[in-house]
Image (cartoon, rainbow, N blue to C red; front, side, top):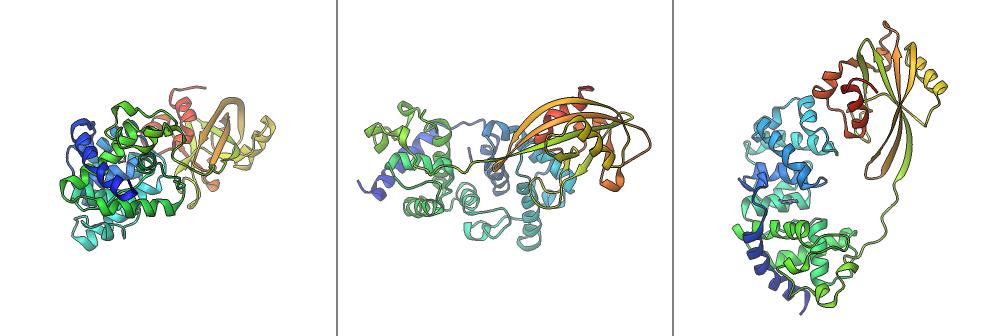
Length: 358
Ligand code: ADE
């Protein structure tokens, strides 16, 4: 069977399987309005389903529609997003909501082409909203979809290449249904990738609606697909994290306006793994007078392209000096727990601060 016929033959059993086997408890499946599908798809892009569920529910409670999202203060938005990572997703959501209010009367546009013009909405998200919420015959191709189709067709195309994604989208578009089935197919492909056609050599083939169609299954080659070129290595950065305490409050500062975690709060930190003397010098350089210094553990955080190896120091500072000229602001532990958005990279130390001690 050639690729297109195989794809066409695979659509009906997948739609039927999804209609009967989908996880019905996922909150974004209860009401398929464009706004709700948009928020869920943005959250799901780089974050696991189980993690997204509580964030999604809280987000929708606070910001139930485009108007409330367009008007939300930045700090509140960051707080709602805290822990999900990739914060530019949240900033783009608000920016796009502003455009939807100004140019589309508060209703998300309903075609993939128009959706794609909004900040943060690429081919995948545009296809997902258009098919799931609007019944348009548009595919939404992410890593899961590439994997299940690479296995179905035993394709040697490198799934890390943009060209492969384009080709797969074009092939899918030729067999895509309209109306309710468009959304069932989009979500069915994702669901199959997340619950059955699992990555890393553990697909649950006996449960698969494609077990009689899948070329990899016929040849026993599931483990070899999808094909991908080697991933780029992450570079490692050493950081020394300063838990600066003064009269029961702790110092935070803003990250630079561009780059990793742009503009978010952070614990003050300096490059390198400093010794105690180095820490004392760094604290002095911030305009503070240290009274005592103790080691406060180590933690590691993985970003997409960088790994932070962090060493913490807890420094009691003399009252009086604020370090404000060096960008420091002081917060009570309770505020740090509930009032400011501190990225997950600092979770280890936030816990120490808010549990009262190190
Ligand atoms: N991953 C991305 N989008 C999804 C969706 N709508 N349902 C389940 N998992 C997903």
